[in-house]
Every structure is written in C-alpha cells, then in structure tokens.
Length: 320
Image 1 (cartoon, rainbow, N blue to C red):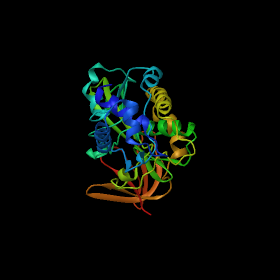
Image 2 (tube, rainbow, N blue to C red):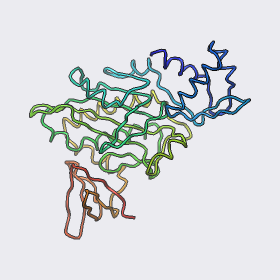
Image 3 (cartoon, rainbow, N blue to C red):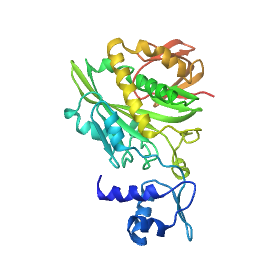
Image 4 (cartoon, helix red, strand yellow):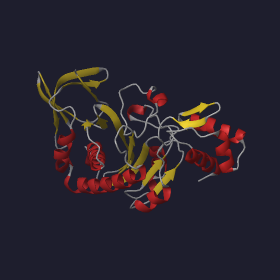
C-alpha cells in the first residue's frame, strides 16, 4: 500500500458513522497537522466518501464504510488475488494482464476511476462502499461455449448472498441481481481472447454494500444495497465465499452446461410469467416472459408465437 492510501486509511479508521470525532484528536493520534487532516478529508470526499464536517464537533461518516482485510482476503482466496485501493477498473486490469493469468485469478478494488457497466455505461464506484471485482476464466472451446455464462454468475452471487441470510433477492435476465425489486448488483462479461480451441474471459461484477445518499442521487434507476440488513455481511468474508462458489459453479458449467443451473435460476427469476418489453434499439417487442432455455436464451410468448432471444444488446423491462 502506498503512502497516499496508507494515510487515508489511517484517517478512515479514526472516523465513525454514529458519532463525531474532532480533527484535533485525529491529528494527535496520527502525528499530523490539522491542515494535513483537512486535506486528506477533502481528498476522501473526492473519492465518493460522504463525510459530515461540523465546526466545533469534527467529522463523521454519513454511512458505514466496509474495507477489505487484505491479508485475510489474499490468504483466503484459492488462486492469485490482486487487491487495490484504487484502479481504473478491475475488468481493465485483468484484460491487460490476461496472458499471465490462470482461471480463478481475481482482482478486487475499493475504488474504480473508470468503472464500466453494459454498453459502456459508467458504473459509479465510490471508495470502500461496495464490491468491485473481476475474475479471469479460460474456457475450452470457442465463444459459443460461453452462452449463458452471465446467468451462472448471477446464480452464484444470489446463492452466496442467500447463504449470508440475505432475503428478497431476484435475478433479471441476463446480468442483474435485485434486492426487494431494486438493482443490487450487475455483471459484465468481456472477451479477452478467443480461438476455436479456447476462450479467455473476464467476469466482472459489482455489488452495492452501503450507498451514500449523495452517490445514490447520481444513479438513474431504482437501486438497493445491503446496509439495511439487520447484519450486513463482512466484505472480506463475502468475497472469499463468493470466489469459492464462482469457481465451483464455473467448473460445473464447463462439465454439464447451463441445464444444471436452471432450477437455481428459476428460484430467483424475478420476471417469470410477467408482461415484459424487450428493448433492441431501435426496436422493441412485448410479450409474456416464460423463463430461459438450456442455452440461456430468453423465452418470450408473443401474439405471433413463442420466440427466443439470446445475446446482443437486449434489455428486459417490466411492462407494468
């Protein structure tokens, strides 16, 4: 960890979300000047951390902050784990180092300066509030072998969160996880390299842990996070368990395909048997969503009959 983040993490360790701490107390405990503390606090705000500053009282976190325990994470993950306080994006890091990676290697960051979602959309990545991670995987065969892969990742995330006691989860085809009918997590699968014999993929995912009100206002759709739970999962433990589940599920997917995950998908499927609209710019089609098939295609019952949709830039929306 560089000096830049070492100091900031020391300051964050002094802050609380339930009471104010004076700048003088922080300065004395870290042997820094009050001016240095103010500069670091301002910089932390620039990284998306909402900190209340009240003259005469000091500083307080607006929301709890959950940082990874790096040594516990690295020792708990089966494979190589790259952990950063700050990076452009975890997917970009893994894509840039794909030639050196093995299946199961994972990159995790506390902050992304250029996080991305589907269609190149920005994925807001305030420091320490959420999970930003990408795992490398090498499949035997061409790109057709990856059909339905994002659905498997969604099943893995939903299963892991359920094991931590999270209720009210739902999956939305093809790559979103919902909590109480609002978006909790997203998946971005990118191809690093592909031949007839092998396909290299980077599997990115983000999970909202504790969204600040300030950051939440920047999101253009209903969102949820884990902060409202009676007991929020420990971030490090959640990542270790999720990595283990992902590896096991991906190995099973390679052996037996998507069919063995259909029951799990159906358990969490949020839109099954509901009226929906598929957006395929510049067109759209409406009908009743009837789930997915063994290839991961969406099954839509329309007035013209049952149709299947797989891949491409398709967005599913409730018709209600």
